[in-house]
Image (cartoon, rainbow, N blue to C red; front, side, top):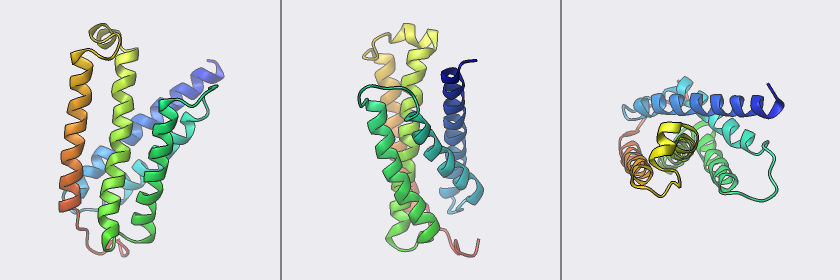
Length: 163
């Protein structure tokens, strides 16, 4: 396996772990459970996903790099809100929004990459402007918009600093 293939595999695995941990964490957040271990795994792997994306060779700034930068900025706020501000006051909402948007960006990339790499999906939307691709992107957007609103409203953990 070449270095680039190894990097790609590592990047994809980290990303999938981050998405899975994020979804588990969101389930906890919706119950006002700070889900500390899934949240930590989600935050660490999502940061690593964005960082490792910059290790791939490139000659110009790509949309994936811009998403990575946006994700890292949002993750910085999420980490600060969770670990330094213990989700107190407005930081609870800042955490909910930035964490969910970071997770959404990873899912967005997963959808794009799936339609580029999985033959059945590529056949359905070879240029990624076809209805199946747009439907998948639209569904992801709607699901994460709803999750972000619900999490912002419902996530009210008690005693995070002591947890």
